[in-house]
Image (cartoon, rainbow, N blue to C red; front, side):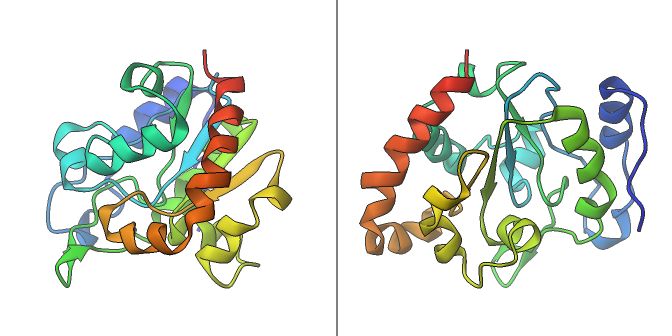
Length: 195
């Protein structure tokens, strides 16, 4: 599948918000949720919006987003500022549920939109959040934990984070180095790019 070609950020945002390409794959009306800020130096490649983000239309508008902002060392105003962060999910629409949890991201979305978004943004720092983003962009790591743990090698332009969902509390408890070593570094790094 070839990616979308656009002339500028305004056209890209308009076309992405109007996208209904995956409408037959989800049990509700498509509602693409992302943040496109061409001047942002940081892009978050995340998994897919959850139900609350789908309802509000605002990326990371839930408790996972609160934890993520804490990890980044940002408050809501900084996170949602027009020039600090872009959010480009693997699936722009909430994929619904499977087996009592959010379904995996819709597969057609990233190949269709990501190239145009990343060319428009040209980030200095790309943060991959969760295993779906990591597997797509950094497939050389067999496990998400391996990619997160290799944070020093991925610098200066990339980092991998686990998903900030409460479902990962056990992972966070087992990997104390994440909060002790990686998060202080991440917050310092993010502080270089956030106004």
